[in-house]
Amino acid sequence: MGRLITNAKVYVEREKFAQAVYMEDGVIKAVGTNEEVLAVAPAGTPQYDAGGRTVVPGFNDSHMHLYFVGENLESIDLHGVTSMAEAKQIARDFIARTKPAPGTVLHGTGWNQDYFTDEPRMMDRHDLDEITTEYPLILERACGHALTANSLAIQLAGVTKDTPQPEGAQFDVDENGEPNGIFRETAANLVMCLRRDPTVEEIEHTLHTAMEHAAEWGITSVQTMDVRPGAYRDMLQAYHNIQSTHPTLRVYHQCNFMAPDEYREFLEQGYITGSGDAFNKIGPLKLFVDGSLGARTALMRAPYADDPSTTGIQTLTQQQTDELVQIADAAGCQVAVHAIGDAAIEQVLNSYDTVCGDGENPHRHGIVHCQITDRALVERFTQNDILAYIQPIFLHYDMTVLESRAGKELAATSYAFATMNRLGIHNSFGTDSPVEDLNTMHNIYCAVTRKNLAGTPSGGFYPDECVDVYDAVDAYTAASAYASFEEDVKGRIRPGYYADLAVLSEDIFTIDPERIKDVKVDATILAGEFVYQRKDV
Image (cartoon, rainbow, N blue to C red; front, top):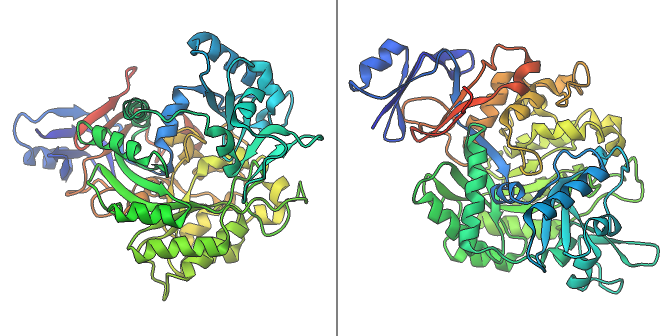
């Protein structure tokens, strides 16, 4: 059955709007005035009167972790906590409310020591012991590149002062050489191995939770990193079960394999970029070459300005990165590499130089995050048309530490969103959720104003890198579709494109940019069907 949207402000492209949309069989059939579209639609077609509200293409989060979004919503949620004491109380309340069975490994995410007003330091095992000594407890930092475990978890994991430090990672120790509970990068696996792998049914439940949350923010597509070595078969089975029955979200998998043999095995099973269908598709090989700015594990060319003892953590060498990129490229697969520090970004660009040439990048290899850059480094993206997957919402926190971590000179050329646009770089928007929430309006607000969610600093943080609303929406829709080779069917409201739309509570193209962060999504449509409608409209 078809469906009509009328009396809307339908965003078609920069400064061009229509009034109505007709959809049928999951595809847009007509876009135009009310009269034009009603003339095309069969009599009796169900009609949604938008009441003048703005309709945009469904948002496409170009990098996030959907399963962990759901898991975060179902576990100890520490996002946004402003003190060590608050984090501890939330965890205690979770235990009291849920009454876990004895021996359950408790898990939570979201804390950020830079938000703690009482004790602005990373949580250690002693802090978590104050929460519980009865259960093993693991709390991940918001960035996902560091975590803290309590003494029981460390003991059960068998980590001692004699445990060798992992290559390309570390666990911190106290003055006696004993683990203090802080585990960085892949050292986290030393304690995360305590957690039981979920069943396929449990994975499905968690994914449904995340998909419902995504729909609340007008998100109709995600490019998600949930496929990893080990239990990836169960993860893909859960996705298949959901997406082959009643999908509410289109999924493009960023597949994380850091060892050549494991990735080759994955490829041999036919999991190559583009395999799948319109709702569930294999995307790029996803790699990590460094950590995060907040945890000082992003790989920098020079020592951190506020900690000259470190330049971050290199999780893959140049040679290892080259090898993995070359394996994927030879198989006709895309690659997307996490790189935050300027040394990490340079390393990835060097690897792409080994498979790209003459300005061509047919497999659309890209870099995820692309945060710390100078002008020359940004310009290198243009040499081989390398994609940039960026997260404007990161500015909300990172502007508070960027200058102290990287120095003012480098800070002035980092998070270079407008420069990327001027240079013609394909840059797409995402949230890296659950590192940040899936809130699409917060993401756009930060891109347009370069202010935090409290509205500071006045005038914006290095405001020359602000983008306008049109570029922000396009980066969140059309550019994200380009990153998944779907720009001819997704990311615009045009005949022949997927009928994936979001109805906004206000016109983000004309309102004061300061108000963008408060705009709501009133409805989300996937393949012509409503998958979300806000109750208080």
